[in-house]
Image (cartoon, rainbow, N blue to C red; front, side, top):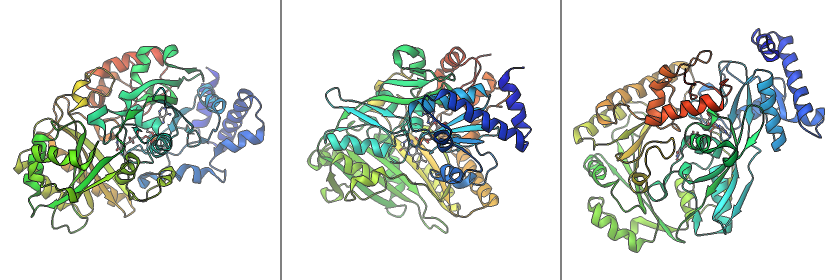
Length: 522
Ligand SMILES: Cc1cc2nc3c(=O)[nH]c(=O)nc-3n(C[C@H](O)[C@H](O)[C@H](O)COP(=O)(O)OP(=O)(O)OC[C@H]3O[C@@H](n4cnc5c(N)ncnc54)[C@H](O)[C@@H]3O)c2cc1C
């Protein structure tokens, strides 16, 4: 029996003395591997459940407190600052047979970066967030623990005509975001974040770092939107910055059902993917919480240019919206980041550097729409939203433009030509308790069931970054390719098999595994 299996079995017996032994062995292993370390420096970054900083470290980035009191907590939390500590933490976990979960921004919808049903080490990259921008090359090297807010802020500090096409929420970590795709207001112009990655540093289970050249094109393909966490730990990404005008424009127009929201959304579906790629108009359809009387459609738009150019484009393609210059606000790109990130555009951009946690509970799901939903189908959705006694919403984000030009196999993220828009369903509640939680999750599953005739089929596609364990999960002790195909083909369509082939070659012992990791082919 191998050395690490002996430790794992000891740990699984959950006796206090066994975990103390593993804890000691882990720290000893770190001491040996991190040159210049001593027991104080290792104690500072290796936290067990009796460390005073353990709970603070675990809860500090929680976005969905559904699992706050879960028993699936990490055996150890490692909070490295320097690269050698990260490499050592991975190699020591592997040596001792401990599973590893990596957390960059902590936004995983199902908490997979900080929860597991098996003893595991959580590698927390919160302190690993340096950014090196090269404006001449129009590129940046960005460490995985960097948040989108920090990246956007740092870009804006050196240029008012550059940006990066990724998600809207400033607290999202680049480690998880690019690993699953990553899209926001500029996807119709520049594609998604993973389309704009030029190189990466990936760490394998032995703690070896490989760049694009050393890892090879297959592995480099897989980590861009194909669940990088199945292949290793991303230390940093090299990204391509994109050009933005000095002035961009945003607007938000709201219509209730009584004000004709249904017809307007119905019309929006016909034109949204065909609009000028500089223009992004999304719709958020939501109730107003308990006892809602109506659904409100919020048309929320970003435009790469000024009002003078925007108005004629919208008048020609979507006159029903009735957009006027007074509805529009011109701003810099970084102000648009604030506007879409839940701040006021007048807020100091430094607020983007803050990391936040959320006290609201949620369940999310996703779909892709290829054919406009008929008006009676939309009316059925509104009935569902009004039947829920807490905040429930659908965020519909347009595709088309650049997304139509990138072939499905270019990177693992396969949702390209033929998709009109993506739907993110969200139900959000404040009350604690398993019964309340089950009630809202059940409602969400009913809405998803209702949507079946209106969304993509064979497979019914889903977006990895809106992770949904209802789609299926691996049995961690015996991961089957056939069983995993059920959820894998929803996220990756025809790219799933290639991901499994690359996984089989690059991690044949399946060290990097989770409830939705890419399986080995067997
Ligand atoms: C409030 C909110 C708003 C969002 N808005 C958007 C949006 O606008 N657009 C969009 O596309 N998505 C959005 N998302 C989804 C988000 O992109 C994903 O949840 C993403 O995976 C989060 O990355 P993270 O690093 O913050 O999360 P984490 O929870 O840290 O990680 C997510 C997954 O990636 C793995 N991982 C993390 N770091 C690494 C690493 N360094 N190497 C390998 N694997 C790693 C984790 O183990 C986990 O499996 C949003 C999520 C939330 C909660």
